[in-house]
Amino acid sequence: MFVFSAGASLAPADVFTWSPQCPSPTWFGVCEGEICDVGNNTPLSLNNWGRSGCGDVAFPGVGDDVIIPTGTVDQVATQINSMLIEPAGTFRFVGENLSCPTLTNNGRIEVASVMPMSTLSGGAHVDNGGVIEFVPPGGSLKFFAATINNTGVIELDGQLIDGNDSSDIFNSGTIRSQGISEIDSLNNTGILEVQSGRLSLRRRIENAGQIIQSSTDAEIEFGTPIE
Image (cartoon, rainbow, N blue to C red; front, side):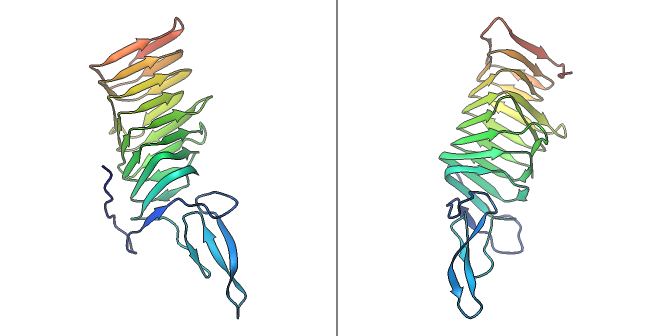
């Protein structure tokens, strides 16, 4: 069950649900509607969170909760309180920093940028019951003081990097690796499958699950970073 919690904010916390109204479906996308102030010829401002205003329009910010029920939303450099990705929704890390203490994924997360590296901060707790895919030819995600609890699937083709030696990945689902991939810290009670290429498990590796090398060119390195 997903529970919203209030965060510190100068304004009352709000819930924003992704509901595109503009031709460009971006986080801060704005388009114009009908004239709302005839005297000043001011058009109605619309955004992709279902909000409108005669002039200014509200966007998710500090203390706010975000829901992505459908569609694809690209990461921006912003700070929010929580994000819920529903089964038909997709969130893409594209090389910015997202500060988000609670991220619940029941849909799809794509890590689509190698450089600049995407980052997740704010003491994030990530519950993944859906799919996290590192989009080929590989993406990188650095997280700070975060916990990733995977009960779903992580398709790894890139790097999951602990930015300050204080984060952990707990896997009771499935992690599949291909290409040249790297995980900093892992507690595995599920399935870790190296399908091809090389997976480097750098440190703090605890395994009570299954580790599978499913092809002859699948390689695992323990305690050695990728050079």
